[in-house]
Length: 440
Image (tube, rainbow, N blue to C red; front, side, top):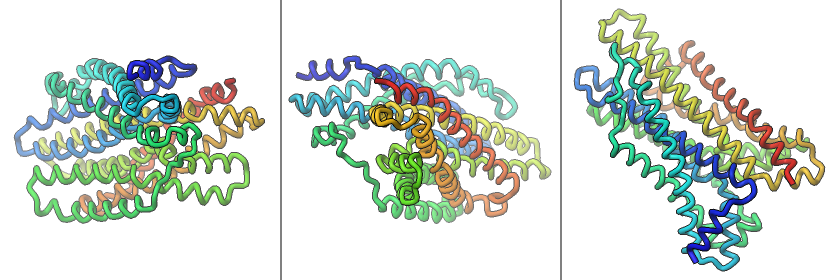
């Protein structure tokens, strides 16, 4: 029975090529960026001089600020076209397929798709590694040997991508196995509880206290590990509380909706707050990164203006280089996350779009509703994420650096660029919406 289930699950279906390509692209981007970020960070841990702990601390913070969002993107890639997969699986369950057969087929499918993307990502990483090795630190290029991970490290990342995909697929099977008819009839509701906000506030408060106290009582290595863990926890909390925040905001917008596009936009968010959050989570990560970038620029400016030794000048230049690299990587992550998630959302909602088309709703109304459902939460998302980051940065660098004009300018530029990426992705996916809207 398992072979028949697998054959049915993997059999091509109309429009399925786009559903397959999206997660493959996403997994490829995730794998390439994770390998590049880890490979670049590892070069600093071989240094042992007096400045080494500073470089290592900055590398650890940058690693967490990039890898955690990248793993979130990997999770989103594993959930791409989840509705379509659930419907196919629920059909097989209603036709008599066993839960074990459905589970095995789903995990195999997810692993194959993730594996194809990860292999493409590894090839991309090997191609860009020589260019990464040319980046100068301490007055000389890092070198290919310093940024290239060992074969065991590359295989570990590859295995982590496969585990992420298989685990996400296995968790998504619970609804299908328990209630295949409910999934097929689209009667399940994606709920988010207010306890998410309570947990988020508690974690941020605890992180603020630890960031304020720990640097004065811990050793260098311990402080680096604790700070990196706290920043990672704060990023994870954003993904926890984000869907609930969007649900509350959309509920208020629904009550005040006076036009069809506003009503449809609010209902789209309320139908699946988690999916809505995934479409704007990239700007949340960009805003979080913007606060660190802004304070980092102000700190570099202060250090540059002071009388410093040659080693200190080199440190300032390297901090500037590292900041630019981190921002470039974060924008690549935002572009991949927003583009893939928006295209995925259109594919997952194609049946709804067809129904609206047959009911006579104009494409322009649907497009305005989609744009509003994406752009409306952006300001709330950007402000909330920046506030979380500011709470964590404040004990380390103080209010003066946090509110310095250069910090504010940098934060606004980074957030503005992120919003621009979201807006451009919305325009770029309009042709896909038009095809989905008019397809028979």
